Amino acid sequence: MHTRRQQKNRYRRNNKTKQNQKQTKTTDQPEETIEAKKEKKDQNLKSVFKKIASQIHPDKLQNLPEFEKDYKKSLFEKARMALETNDYYGIVEVAEELGIESPPPNKEQIQLMKKTNQGLENKIKEIQNSVLWSWYYADDEAKKLLMSKYIERLQKMHAGT
Image 1 (tube, one colour):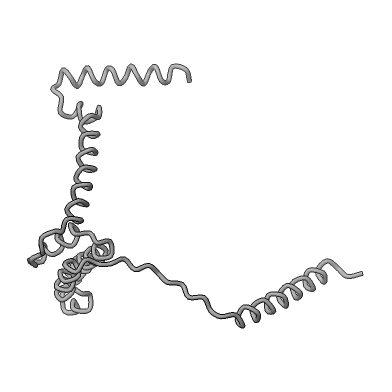
Image 2 (cartoon, rainbow, N blue to C red):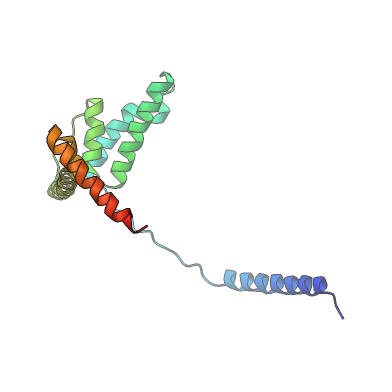
C-alpha cells in the first residue's frame, strides 16, 4: 500500500503528463488569429495631438525643471487619453493650455458635448435641490428652521434604536 504523499505525487505526475500531451496536440493545430477592433480616430484630433506631442512629449522634456516636467507629462497623458477616447474637449483643453489652435468640432463631437453638458446640468440641479445647498444659501432664520427639521428627522430615525 502506498502512502498518501506517494499517491499525491503519482497523481501530479500523471496530470503533468496529460497536460504536456494536450499542449503538443494543440500546437499541431493551425493557429487562430484574433482581430482586435480598432476604433477609428478623428483626423482633426490626431493632427492636434501631433502638435501637442511635438511640444510636450516626455522625451523632449529632459532639460526642464522637475515640476515643469511633471506638469507637462500630465498634460501629455491627458491629451493621449483624450485621443484614445476621441474626446474633443480633452484635446482642446490641452491645446489651449499650450497655445495651440484647435479645429472646430464635427457634428458627432458637438452631440457628445451636448450630452455631457446635459449630464452636468442635471447634476447641478440635483445639488441645488439638496438640503445642504439650501442651508448654505439661506438666511439665518431659514438656516435655523432647516436645522431644527433636520434634528427632528434624526431623532425620529433613531427613536426605534
